[in-house]
Image 1: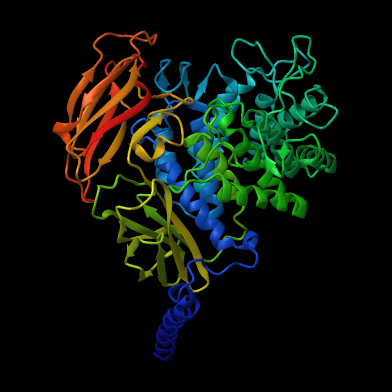
Image 2: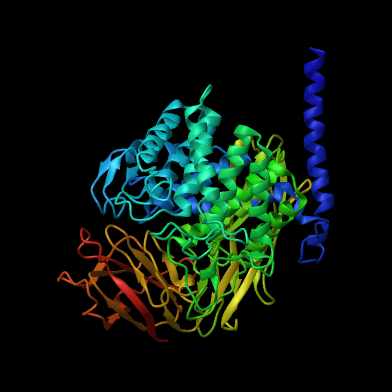
Length: 640
């Protein structure tokens, strides 16, 4: 019995030590310092890197549709997003999203007509006329196999690869896989994917020679194809005359060339392959490469351009394989570059809701804003994943504030309140006595100002989550604009900072598709935005705005600039809805675009924050044809 008694005593001493250490380390924030103590070397803070990745991964998976079992409106992007979640789980040990991977596998492996999951018909087993799309799914299922060792995922990857091999063609340009079933184009991405896919299959199938032979052949062909230019950068593809077409150097083409070479090197240990990979990598970050002021930058990241839905995800693919490069070579230059990307994304490309944008350096303007959606989230998440060291840190602590981007419309007198919650999450093997201190702008107050929470994680596979009710009080004299509320969480050497971006506004006037819209966007559901003055919801998607009108409001009107096949509903409680506008004609050309004014006075509610909120929801009056309601601009008129 003696060892058991000693172990029990040790456990008590550990808990006591954690609690005492927490109080000693955390005294400073409670005695006046609003800022948390600095970390000597944030780049090497592994627990913080895990926490950042977890917070961003949770945001990404908030866009996952469990019924369709994918992310909305993009087939290949969904494959890459799920593969990114697989990377996250593999890197951190968190296994909470394995069910979503399997849900997608089981629900979406069948045959689907065009327009259901992809613009193309799906032929079954995640294949279609888009050969590169099929390859993305093959890599996704290999990632699932690595996580689970379930042979059904490996079998699916083999099935997909056999399908793709049917488009390897030596009669044109001497080899290479066609980009499409119509055999119109041989390009870098399809063949970079093919090299990686075949090499991964070889490295997972004992005794294989077939896939290794195909990977070697593809690598040799790719190296001699001319797509790699004299600067060591990969142009998009080949002309009909089988010469480099000089088209854009996209980051994902460069990334797959690096990633394909790395996986083939693992299979062969051929030093010439690794030397080529390093040349491609050095060209990426060298003069004239893919970096602007130290940050990985797509050509369409220029502030006078907007990346399309495909390009939004390219940098994350590059970073995925750059992480492989760092893990394989342990080259400090490559590691420093990866760490810088993660720090830049977290510090410059993240909003208070922990959403990550398309421009990692964070540049934005009214005409070409920095776009935030699930694709950009998945892309930038790859940089955060790459910053997680191996082996995985022993413990981590993260915090969030909700609502993260609330709006307050003050009344003429009296304070307004923001009810919300502080969310805490942790991984590890010991209890964490966590102290949280909250700081609000001068004249505001936060309750509780400080609180202790004990988190009891049980490893890394399922981080533990706890929430603490909070209330922020905003004085009526608060000035219009954005104000920051900060919560600092500390636990025995771990720390994390969460923020809420509170918008104080006396009026409603914004373009959709801009940063000015986001605080009002209560529930984006699966709506989309393709730039300034553009938010639409088709099929069963919708989007909801919340207008927290002042407590002394006597009447209110909202004017929407809207077109297409819209349904507009209004509610005082986000539960009971009244339809106030509906387009009964199937209009798909924008010919019904107009300003439409709605009287909201009958719907003024009674909010927990003391406001008179109104919820306004836009959806699709013809959900089967893909042309749902589209809103350009929103204004409101308020009488107090």
